[in-house]
Image (cartoon, rainbow, N blue to C red):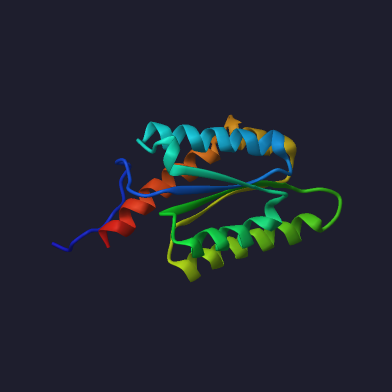
Length: 154
């Protein structure tokens, strides 16, 4: 029988950073509430959580990299919302945030969780920030917990 490695949702060791975009705050604040709720429900104390606010989703990767380089965090949760408009600005911001966050994870070896919504409409974003489709901030935080525990077991 092969040995199987898998994360779990037991209370993790270490500190968590949440990098939170202010742009589209109506959506992002709901994602933050969901993430904080998930962390609390899974035994992460408030003293083990730092929230860092950035102007928008484009700025998330550079701050996530700085936090990863600090060595103070077991995981970094990135929260933002990019909603399609009439120009191609959406494509540039969503692409930069996505690839930048992935690069931070690969470079640092830390769980750097992508909790940035990329939606066609405000309604889709609201659905993913606590309405019909659940709260993706909550899901990002549980993913972070699971990944911290998985990484500790590897």
